[in-house]
Length: 386
Image 1 (cartoon, one colour):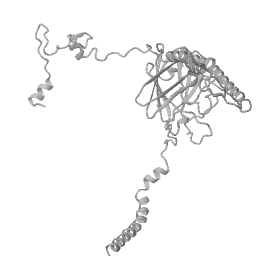
Image 2 (cartoon, rainbow, N blue to C red):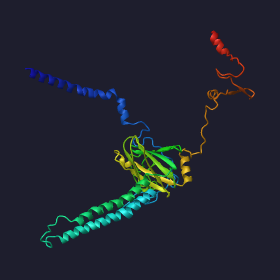
Image 3 (tube, one colour):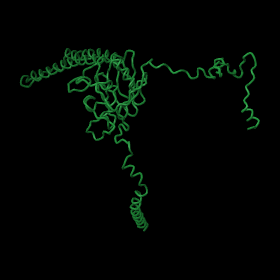
Image 4 (cartoon, rainbow, N blue to C red):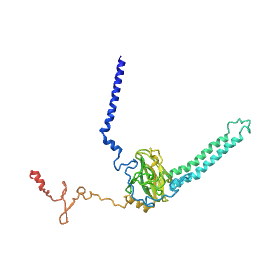
């Protein structure tokens, strides 16, 4: 009997809930029509692409100008070749030489020897040519050879590898420091010694439906698709540039193949690498860490220019060359506080332009007592007069 009552109560609750649900759903749009309209029609100026909501692009871009240099085909960009890109830094040239002139030939020689041994064993010890197999299980000479030869090969690889690592992680004194910050999904650059900081976003194609009207489309003068950016990092030719790399949200990776740079950017950590480029040009890279949905859409573009043109770019960004701007004067150098602290009384000008000493600070002796200045307003307020 109790079970039957519980079943009836459950059915009653279910029917009541089913009867109330349509009424609540019908009243919801009428109760808040404004938020629905706002969601359907975004306000003016709201971006439809969250990657760069307020992208303000320059009105005109002059191809070949500083910051908009036309890339050279096959230099600093993928061109379909097999192997390493053309290297333009001392570390990159050393690494490419080690790879091309030592590792690849060594790998080819080992492969040929191993293949020859396999073919010899297959022919010499096949069943038809060797019906009675050998009973030998050990050969001291062969065991010594196949132990010593791999050790010598590893030593031969280790010596130039360690030398390359020592050169890579012992940079010369830096002429310029650039802070690189990875975001989802764009890069930020800061040149603290020059007062310059900016964000860099990928340029979209003219046919891309997500491109906003205030974003200019990519052209061949900007670089290859998915690699061209709206704001390039410009560094001076022949100078040692130190990159301080970090991230704002997740792990990214700052990679420029032509510089032999691939450095992870970890949130809360600072990593360092460097480059010295003697060849002017535009060099492209990408984030090389799986950092989220738009991982493949945060390219890197570095433009190398002579020193004079680099200074021109700094000025166009509102920065200044080190030493070009004099330090701001100390506003407390002539204040009454600093004057009293130094033991000298500050001076005040009179109507004739002559300087007269101001009253000395309380507790100091000037040799002759000086009456305290009277202020009628203070006296009136003290006595209660208007």
